[in-house]
Length: 330
Ligand SMILES: *Cc1c(COP(=O)(O)O)cnc(C)c1O
Ligand code: SF4
Image 1 (spheres, rainbow, N blue to C red):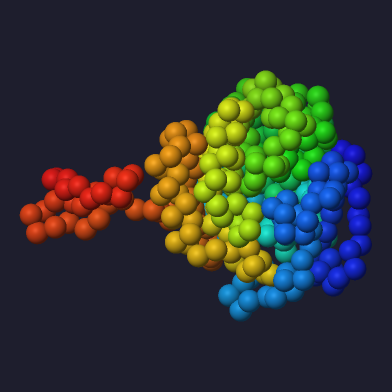
Image 2: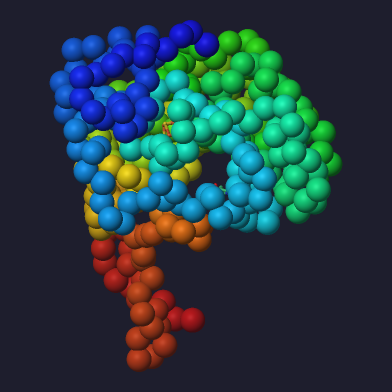
């Protein structure tokens, strides 16, 4: 990977939270105003110093579900494996901002061996999800080592990688990364992307190469105030992704990470957006809108809901995409 530029913006924010930039993103951000959807995501803002009482350093409850270093085991059939501890760029709304970068530790040597041994010892683990720190920030050689070790475990049937590298450092994905994806198991790659302006020619090339290497591409998007809390923006983003063979998977309601309240919108906003998208776009373009319940209780879809209460004659009220109610006997 090309070296990142470690700029030192003048405010106190970078002392509280890591800041990092790639040469690629630096040039993409050049000339954009401070309230631009890309600037907002990647450049530190004073509001990050406004911590709220209900914000926590572990907003989705990774810590209580960590049996060995680097593993989060909340659901019997799948685990998160945090191999990398850093990201090429730190999103200002990151839900793991207090666990990665300078606050994280790489999973190497005996620690990595112990994590792989944990997977081997738990036959119900069907899927292993490499997540952030950004797995694609590892060298292709290290990535290949980890994926190959996991693929050699008989009960592991699916590998998944969650990454923002194709968006923030598309030029850093080299042949060794593509080679690492050649595994005897299906490899799903969920790309974190929030705005259509993130999809440049370089990103298109990176996605095409990843797809050609055999990865099944998904996307995950964080709903963010001022970035994508807008129907046209989400529609353009999801249509673009589907055309690039990336299936929108999750729209995340933002987590209660410290100093991120300026990014959050009420849940009704997300529900309203999903409701209008249901009317206007192909089902292929619709992710599931989810909230990760604080405390480690898992992710759940948060609507909108189309099924109403049962009426006196036992029929359900079902709402159609246009908002009309229909009676459904059961
Ligand atoms: C998000 C998450 C997963 C993956 O959830 P899916 O709904 O399968 O995408 C798995 N484990 C943990 C701990 C998670 O937070
Ligand atoms: S890529 Fe993911 S883990 Fe890394 S800073 Fe952004 S949100 Fe956090």
